[in-house]
Image (tube, rainbow, N blue to C red; front, side):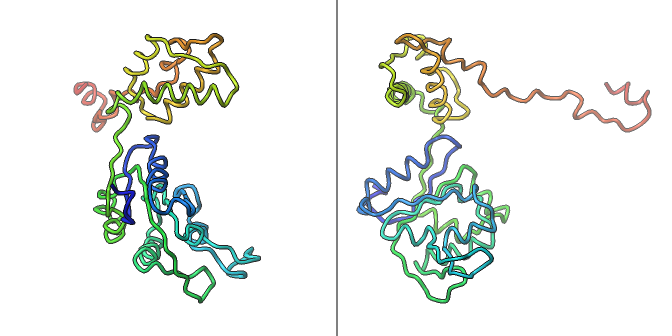
Length: 257
């Protein structure tokens, strides 16, 4: 339903749940499918370069700007712009992005000409933007502008019924990519996959099955090929001494233990 409109969509969910796949699905199911889908990870680009990446720059705008370069807003013309990890945007840049979203106009760095664009915006975050707004780490007006249609993507542990379908898909895809004969998952292997908590969500599941295909010499993947215990992220062990009050003499401290 959201794909058929131009409403801004905010995808919220843990890392590895497949937020970019959802964003691409929104684009593929929209009337803008023939135009570009342009993605940018706001957490992966240094703050000093992010504005130039988003809005582009004119020749001579700064040292090293040897020629004009269009930004992601411009490249996404008539298509979809996907702002991944939007919660990591620096505060000074949030105001300029808000203006660009509201007016669909902006200027390149070092430029004076106003550029008008026709884009559909999709944003994603793995952090709670409401809390970031409360902590004054994210602009409230930008949050409400981005969350026109919020979609929460549940973690894989909350949708175990998806695991068999995803598992078979990743095994088939990996076998095809590696030029291997098709493989099957044993019943016990599927039980292990379905009972695992998947802290890394779908991304961790994909990595586990790619590893299993590499390790499997026959045509069936067994639990030993998954090696999930060895790759599980261990919960931190609580330090029993961390909360100990060490004020006072040795005798007083010893008496409190």
